Length: 302
Image 1 (cartoon, rainbow, N blue to C red):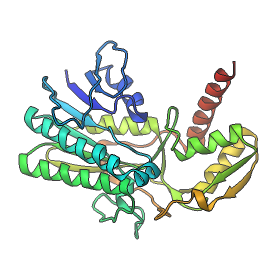
Image 2: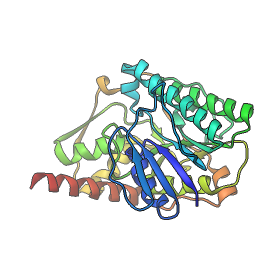
Image 3: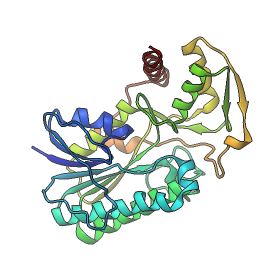
Image 4: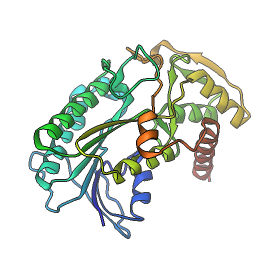
């Protein structure tokens, strides 16, 4: 049985991935927050940027997810961003080298910057335009260097715009649903940028496919829907689901510098190598996400 070490265990992706993995594997989750142990799961409450970090046990695989993912936070706090996002990656790669573990790193479509050609392939050269994107690109370079220098099997999963239950407050779709539920109007930055939105359960099936693969060396995979949808279209879908229609205000204060205007994943590599495909449509995913947050909001009121 695989024994897997996972960082960022209490994060958005981690809380969806771990319940699926413990069905077949032994999992040790690393997080700043304490997690209740269960069958096939234990946790360790440690700081993965600590210079004295030591991992005693041997693991077949390491999945490194811990990171600051809020683009605005990273732009306001670049030192903290690189401290966690890059330094921790090198720390975990060093552990993988010493333990001879397979390594999966969760990266982001942000590394592509504003792509010229769509849909974008894994071998496309991008120019990161934010500190968050740069931190992911730097971590990817570390991964490739460790793989080529030490012969490690390392897979990078470049996630596109993931959404679903338990997403962070910085998540665009969370923000939209939260405003529809609680406000009389919606205040956003630009509404015309296009994103490749993918429901979290489809990401999980993709990650498990990568984990179970026997690919050697260094590999990169796009995990997206393969479709480009505007923010405006997402808002309109949420209006339909909620039976509400609010005034949309485009605020200059909420607009990001160096905003990615359009991005669409080419997911042919995932399809070809793993026979993977998305199962949840945007409409269905938005309905599931909206219903989840509404139920949580109602519980809080009572």
